[in-house]
Image 1: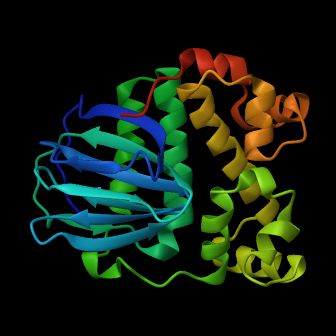
Image 2 (image 1 turned 60 degrees about the vertical axis):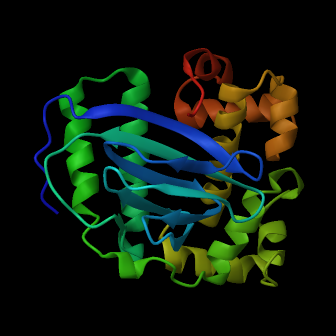
Length: 254
């Protein structure tokens, strides 16, 4: 995909949460929009024909300027990020990231969000954006693929993290043993399942830190940590900053 991106192309990057009360859109933006799903699943209606597209994390969709879209979480809640950017170039109404590339692209999206939070110079962020866009070389027909048992389990777990004590609980959602689930997850995503569960907890906590006034103990319980101390320790390892520092620098997803 060829885009001519200007030096100040990135207009906004943000993270947030979709649930049954707070959906996606309807919106019709004049710029390109990269919507990336970090946890859970969403169903979107896009374009003049209101084509239905289902995304299950990790996955993303690139939406062309002046394309109307709206939607909501499939169940529970979904963690997502957006990147608004300007560019010279044309494409169909939307394009999805090819599933085999999704874990690699998600790592770049997360790195890009980290750079944005740190206020890193735009030129470095643009290098990542161009690399991410290069990954959207599939077509719209790749949308709506059936979920695997692993993706379905993670989608369900994302909406009930407070009851997910560990991987056995996640695996049980789709009638798998812990060992079987670990093996299928690594085959599909190429990463340890335990790390993915921690990431889901941290992503959910990020949203609560940025959008609520709940205490660290309340957030810890809501996302499945035993207490505020274990939550703070895990969060600090993940982000290299404390939950309090993250809350002070975060803004609402809108």
